[in-house]
Image 1 (cartoon, rainbow, N blue to C red):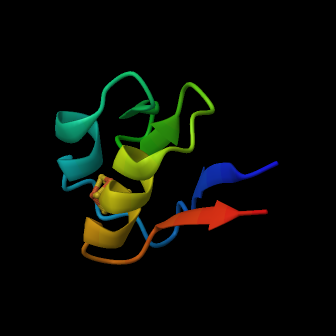
Image 2: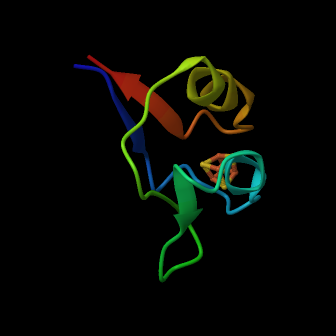
Length: 60
Ligand code: SF4
C-alpha cells in the first residue's frame, strides 16, 4: 500500500503542502510538515511533486 511521508530534514516549512491539502498535511511542533492522515491520491502525488525541496515522498 502506498504511503506518503515527510523527510523532516528536507522540509523548509514553506507551508505549500498544508495550504493545498490540510486534511493530509499539517504543521508539527517544530513548524515542519507532518502527515496527519494517510491518503495517497492524485492530489497528494501532485503536491509531492510541487514541494520545492522534494521533502514529500511516496513509498510503496
Ligand atoms: S511543501 Fe515541502 S518544504 Fe513546504 S512545508 Fe510541505 S514538505 Fe515542507
